[in-house]
Length: 338
View 1: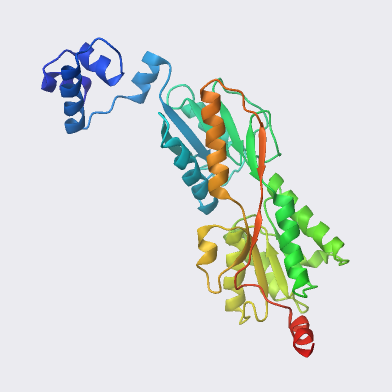
View 2: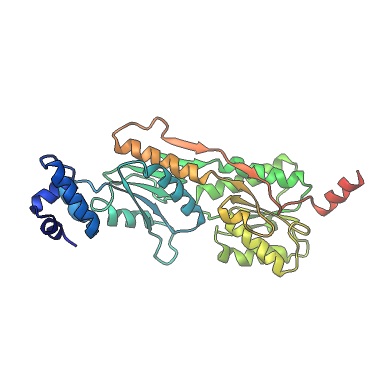
């Protein structure tokens, strides 16, 4: 369907249709109404490329992610809750399609989209540390921490401290930690929080109980199985994200271990799937919708030419207690005896 088809159906010139769909003056209200009716009936949409060449703007904002998974999907929902009341349209784009290479995906994506398809972008967990675009950018949970561009993240350190304290309060002493991706600041902060939490409780971290899960349930499967088949296995596992925590519970079941009877498990993120497991997963909740919404509000302010009052926003995390954690066996006996 082309603009010529619309003009012919409405009985007006192509120039008149162009004025109407681009919101320019000089067209009688009755004619505007007739053109809009034809546009709706025919399903005409002007080309973003052509629109950008004419107006130097596309009216589209992008949310760029490495891949679509529960974390980024929840952030996207939060961004949409804000942009839907704005004059902009929203495009989501997954750029991590190059054999699992986590670095550089955002540069490839921006090179494809900048200037012709989007006017501004939110980058979710970007690996770049500098701004190289002519249009506004906002970063969510960047690899290296706060960047030159405005950014939003959650309190990863505080959340990990709370998760560790929860397990310690339940009487667990032999606690395993399943690390995230080594290239992400969030993963480093979560491990730091775990270690600080153990030190605060006067507990040493057993190096054999710290394994890399890489935030990926498939890659985490072997380290999880190794942990749970140790002769002196842990009584609790703190996984750096919910997906690997859920995988931990699955493997525990395969090995005949009961959660939480034989093994307590806690995750991080509070993705929707965490409440649907059996048992439901105890986790650290990131306000993922709020993170996406805060980033979009920042981006809209930048699009309006406004200064961002807080270039870096850090949102609170909370302990979400469900059924996958319970007192350690010895601690349970002590409580019953008391």
